[in-house]
Image (cartoon, rainbow, N blue to C red; front, side, top):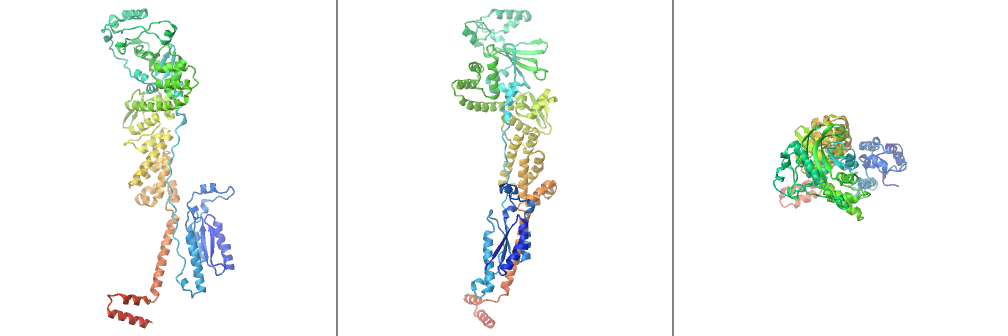
Length: 632
C-alpha cells in the first residue's frame, strides 16, 4: 500500500482544485483510507509572472491563461482545511517549496507509522508536518529606457533646403545671370572662406591709404572709363579712394592664350575695401569689390531682394562669383557644403576640384582625388570628419549668435538662433517659419513658459543631434518643451538622463520618492511614457514607504494610477496576507509547544545536573534528591 499521497493541482486552473475535492480525494480515501494526504499547489510562479509572455511561449493550441483564473493562496488553504490535510505550494521555475513538500511527506508517513509501530523510539520525536514560509516573489526589474534611432531624414533635409531655399539670406550670382539662393549658416560653417566673407565689414571707409603708397599702377581702358565716370559724378575726392590695379588672367583664358585684363588689388595693399553706396529704387546698398581678396568672388553687396518663395522683399547678401565657375559643378560643391557628401557619378570632377581649391575646401578636393583614384571608400571618413568639424563651428555660432536671423524671447531672457538649421532639423520649426504664420515674417518669436537653459539645450540638440546638460537645466521643463516641439528622440534622451540622475541619487541614499511622485503625472500628461513607467515601477516597489511618507499625494492620484499600484505593488497583497497567516500560525505552534513541554514531568537529568554543579549547597542537593525519590 502507499505510505503517503501527494495530491497536486495547478493554481492557474480552478477546475483542478475543484476536482481535488470532488473526485480525487474521495477516490484516494476509498482505495487508501489510512494513507496520509498532502495537498500541493503547483506553478506558483504564474501568480506574479507576465501572463502575456507565458501565453506566447506555450503551444499554439494550448488554452491561454487568464489573470482572473490565478488562485490566491487562501483558496487552496480553505480546501486543505476542509479536507483536514496540510497544504503547500511549489514552483519548479522559482525552485521553491519542492524540498518542503518531500520533507513533510516523509514526516507524514512517519507519523502514520508511529500509530502502528509505537514501540519504535526513533518515531517518537516526529509530531506533525512543519509550516511552510510564504514565497516572496522577486522584485521586478526597473524598465529600461530605450532611446530610438534619430530621424532618418535629417541627413536629407539640408539638401532639400538647398533645392527649396526657405529663409534664404544669400544670393550667389554665376555668370552675371544665374542666381542660386543659399544660407549663410550652412556656407560659413562648412567653408572658412565663406565664414570670413560674411564677417567682412561692408561699411568701413578706409581706402585712402592705398593711394599714398605710390606704387606703380597699370590701369586698363575699361578701368579708366569707370574712374572718369565716377569723377564726373562724385568729384576728384572719390579717385583718392581707388586702389592700385594690376593685370591678372583667369585660368581658362590663360590656357587659351587670350589675355583679358581684370581688376586685382596689389599684393602689398592687403584687402581692398571698396565701399559704394547707391540710392536705388530698393534703398541703400553696401558693397565691396572682392577681386583682390579671392579668385572665387568678384563682389559682395547688401541689397533688398525678393524672396523666391514668399515673393517678399528683404535684405539679402548678393555675392557675385568668378566667371570661370560653372553652374553644374558649383551646385555639386554647394551640396557638399550642405551635406558633406559628393556623388561618385559626378561628371566634371576636375572643375569641382578647381572650385574647391578656389573656395579653399581642401576636403572636397581630396574626395575628388579619391574618386579619380578608385578609392571612394575613403570618403566616408572625410564625411565624418566634416560633420565633426561643422558641429563645433555650429556650436560656436550658437554661443556667439553669429549669422543669427531669429531671436526667441523667453521668460528669463532671449537667445539667438538660425532659421535654416531649425527648419532642417525640426518639423515644428519648419511649419512655423515656412507656413502662413506671423513668425515666418518676423525676427522675434515669443515662447512663453520656457526657460533659457531649456531652449539652449533644444537648440544644441537640433544643431548637433546630441543632448547636452547643464547645472541649471530642469529635466521636466525640457521634456515639456521637447514634447511641445514634437521631438520624441529628445524626449527619450531627456528621460534617460532623468532616470540616470534619479538612480544615482537613490544609490547615494537620497530620498527621491517626492520627486518621483511629481514626475509621474507630468510625464504621463506630456507623453514621456518611459519616464512614467519608471516612476510607476519605483512607487510600486516602494509602495509601503511612499504611502507612509505621502498619504495625501497617493490618495490624490488618478484612478488609473491607483488601480495600477494595487495590481503591481511589491510585495503583493497575497504575500502580505500569507506572511501574516504564517506568523500567526507560527506563534500558535510555539505556544502549543511551550505548553506541551510545561505539562511534561521533570526528567531525571535535572537531578544529575543539579548535583554536578560545584556551587550547590548540600541542603539543596538533599532536598532535590528527596523530592525526586518521592516523585518516583
